[in-house]
Length: 499
Image (cartoon, rainbow, N blue to C red; front, side, top):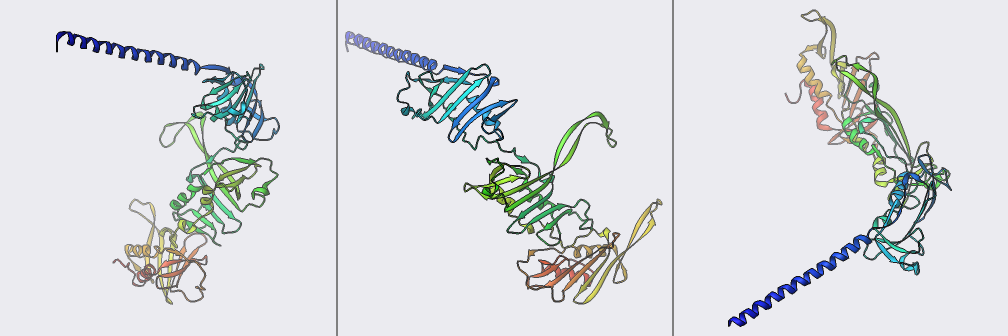
């Protein structure tokens, strides 16, 4: 290639590079102007209100049409002053419209409102301040690109594009605007009473028996099951706390009626279910004068108290949308709660929480154990007397007997542990007339309380796998046959099956 041709090629390449640079600069410049214009367009300020100065609010959306007046710190319905208004939703509406900025002007006229959904707005708000300043805003259709809503503001004859937040913030229907009770919640451990009353089924009742007045055996099972059984059984505390987890939160969805005049419409004139709960509410208060802990010597500046509270909830019909209608005792509000939540409260498997030990008295509360095995009697006895130890302190001395003969303490206690290990293993589904004949085994515990209480359990043949148990409450449960046979053998041989 000649020098002349090479020089021309270099010149041509240089010119092309310059042209590319000019084109790039042109597009950058044009885009810069467009972005600047859009930024300015996105900040069309239309109205500003002071939320603290707003005294009245007209709100229309969906099926809601409310005129709200502020009285003190509360918003009330002008037409229905007794209606509880959802204060949070009112504040949300005010926060949505307190500053109105448009993205851009869509039309300088209000012709063809139907094209924008503004002939019948989806939402309308009119807010008025103390000083007479008023804001009106009407929300129409959402634009096809979903980046805003068509709107008219202060009836200035223009149609604007407002950001999405204005449309989404004005979506409350009439039911939404009625206040619901705050969620009631507490811990399982704070419950001290529960009753579920089912109009067409079994009732359930659990009582915390603080004085162990029912069991009287100094056992570790202070919870009493009063229903559905005719007489009480004790409950396993751990299992019961797990069940109580279904009753620790009452979250109300919507309020559908507040008049108190149409309970029958919702199945609440004669509720199908009633839930009664007693629970403790904890509060902590500062002491006016600090105190000193007698045990640690530390200064105490506050104390925690537990106040007894109660809740009675009536359960009515379902609404067809996965909710029950409910009403609290003493309230006119008909509210909704989720069907799944309520069903867990109504469907109780009592056997899953029962203390499965047939009789588990602390040995220190027992004076005598009498057993009848196929008509033959056996007696285990503990005789206690006062004595003094090496230091001269008074102690209680226990002497152990089997069928009138003194035996070693260790052997006696091993057999005792075997005897009290009898458990309910299954619930008897139907009455088969068992209990009319003679039991295979009967065990009676004479307690050393002031009434000399006697606890008795009898085991009747049932089938190849179980004995039917009568512990003084009627025959409801079954015990594993192998286990009861082992207990009988331990009593007869006066040694455990493991020895």
